[in-house]
Image (cartoon, rainbow, N blue to C red):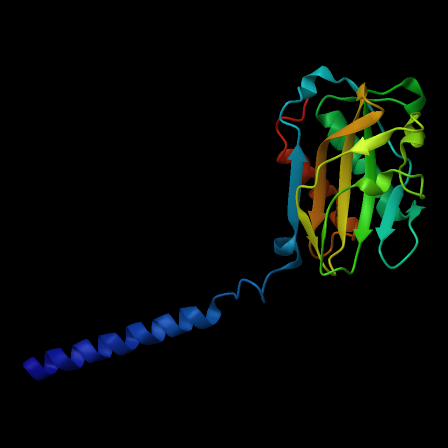
Length: 213
């Protein structure tokens, strides 16, 4: 009777061990087996002293700045860029803001950029807006001579394309500076693919519940 119990116990142990090995072999490696969608990260930052309900109108750039440390900056209107502009417009309107032409003195300005750098790491600091070097300088919004202010919040890692959406306050101007009050960034695999634009844009607006009129 004792031998039978031992044999049953050993058999059960072997079966359990095989089951654990089987499950382990099927389990996804968190780094190696991520899908493109799982690799994407959505970062949002905002000024928590701002009452977004106090803003009514916004305008958005008519093309997208393409920024790289290995090529000259430029503005583009590819199918991807047009889709991004349309998606951000819709996201803002769904939040209750009214789209107006930039000549109508909007209260908010939306700048869009695609970033492609090869540094091992860089601090994301949109100081590249100032200086009129082919980026979205403040003269585009009717404030030549002004600078943008935005503190550095996070790091963009090497060899990873990203997309930045910057919301600038045009209503409250101080000391010849325009302040960015909300920012969103897409990072990861496929962020420059047109078919992903709508879902990525929706994601950053969904995780910004404070952003509404």
